[in-house]
Amino acid sequence: MNYSCPIRVAVIDDHNIFRASFIRLLDDYNDLNVVFESNSGEELLEKYNSNLIDVIILDLNMPNLNGIETCKRIRERDKNVRILMLTMYDEPSFVVKSFEAQVNGYLVKTAKPKEVHLAIMSILEEGVYSNEFVKEALLKDVINKNHINPLREMALVEFSETELNLLRLISKGKTSKQISKELFKSKDSIDKYRTALLRKTKSHNTAELLMYCAKHNILL
Image (cartoon, rainbow, N blue to C red; front, side, top):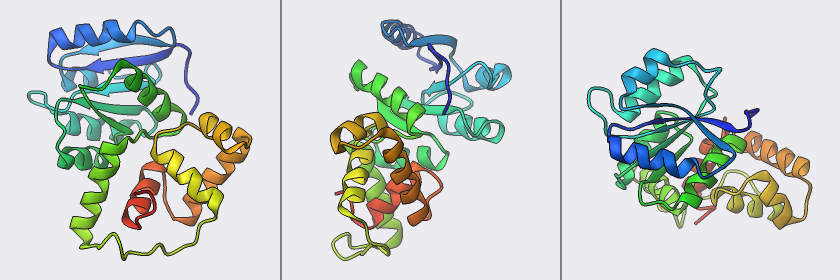
């Protein structure tokens, strides 16, 4: 995804003190610029301009219009903007519902500033950010919905050793640039592998690719 530099960020959270403190945290990064803030999803929708925002950081629990509903309405207008759910809720069900609403990443508010910055960069460059908590939540959902025994479910396609290594690194939220260094391959080569994996697993995006891997016990 092409994005501006500094990256234009919108912060939506109904807790005014937290929002102000969080914005000050983001201000410590020279590659981030908070261009819009609000305490409600309604105001975001009212004033939203896709040409002015690269990343939306969204609280889950807000009055009137919660983060998931806000995300759904944004997606009706803009499929490309990156959305990071940042919330106090660590229940797996909220992770699943958020990804079903097409967020690009999910973090709890106990995350360290370094991980928040990593998540922002990952969703911009790779389309998704996943940590161990997110992976486990998605895996549990797949198992519960499909009555899967993760030790017996087999992948329908075969993966090379390089592809498996790439999948594991993607699941850790690594960018193509970081993966290229670890696998000693060019970034262009990694991008080609990534595209091939999407095609092989019939996934439309990285989030679906991770769901496929969770279902077939590839990552855990």
